[in-house]
Length: 317
Image (cartoon, rainbow, N blue to C red; front, side, top):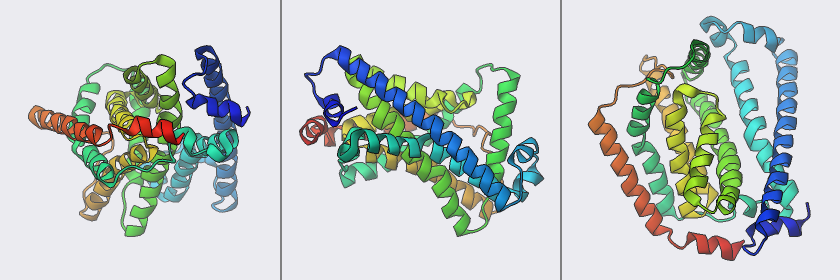
């Protein structure tokens, strides 16, 4: 793909058929990069585990008891970190850099920085949304699912519960990096920066594009007990990206959402309280309703502050 072809993605005069072909070609390249990076990440993880820790990952994955997870906590954190890096962040950055070259930031609208007010409101809306999102988690758990899926998610949640048990500020920093920063950067780069941005001109409906992106974003996690709340999260992030015209607002908001929960686990651990990742907290309907309308209100303020963002994108790109 030449740079001239790449720049055409932002050219409104581009033939719609050609745009579809360009999107499919880009998607093929991105998926190929994801597969390559995942294989590379798996090789690096196994090599480090063998040479540094003298542990066989295949054997480790067969023993997921609480004692084994706690004993090999550093290895599990390494596995999760490498998984997040190789699945989203690394392939996303490589795709943008090699395909778009000097315009790699422009390709995902990362060359535009949001207003400070938008950043503050974006972070606030993610915290305020927690009661409503937790309420949708309660509703999601009432949907019948196969026992095999429920057991698989239960095992995953139990592991995360042990990994998020922290006893020092250093562990907090490490977990913020692994569970908040890397996922926020990688997932927003792929889903909002790449997928949502390209689906809007293809579908010619920004709302449908945001919804489809949010659904794919949720489904790709393969955690169906939390499918609906993750769709809601994807919708909020999608509109923050759309209205601000900057990927950094979506990244920052995603980081605040994940980071707020990591910090919550840290303070709970410091008080000797063990939280369960998979446990649905009981949220009163009125609290969820207040949360929902506050989110709508703050999102409306963000939209009004950035009404000219779409014009700004076209001029800068």
